[in-house]
Image (cartoon, rainbow, N blue to C red; front, side, top):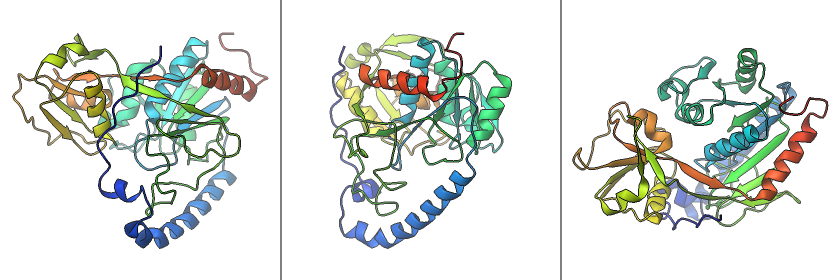
Length: 342
């Protein structure tokens, strides 16, 4: 089944709007982007010299643009596919936004402030072991020591963390593509593009891929069922006829509101908070009897004070050709290893 694309979200503002074209503001920042280019290149070379192997195949799901591109939903989809194919995947992440600094496991009930909201979400939704560390190789070693049956690692983010050797690189783009094509801070790029990757995944217009790199369109929409912190479920369609309030603390909150609109839900009030916000200062705009709808990523933090908030998972669909490519590259990554499930 092909999922219909969501309606376009609100036009970007602020720095994101500046990054879409090579206007006066971007030109003013261009000299700084050349300084960034030199530092980024030096750091990449340093990491490659110190690159270490995980001992099992590694799949990196990342992006080359600043801000959210939808990496974590792709990680969820990749892990689910690997599990269906008989692999036993583990997940590693930096754990962006966490207050801790050590290497630790993210469990389904781990607080987001301790492990990061994305690792907490992955631990809740995938059933795979998840470890976080500033150095991904530290997370890999701790994970494999505790779960020796893991035979493939998926890194949520980390395309620029070259100290961890990888077999497969998946680069994810949102519908803004590479923007004006310039490096930070004059543009959105974390590193020069194009650069070699195994495949690019995109919404909207495909970015220029390097060489003959395969590019695959991905489709996203909200799931038909929402869940709250009390363990209850509800059909999302029921909120179409109600007054609701929606909140999102993600990189592109207006995209979430647009996907709600695609399901026939027009919130009476919306709140777009900074990405990874901890909700400590969140207050409702409407009464507490009004249903509150949030992203699945925000749920664990919001449920601490608003357990009746309804979290809506994101569904993602990729073409069969992508999964065939992933399976083939993974089979070739470690031919001396036993096949999954053996």
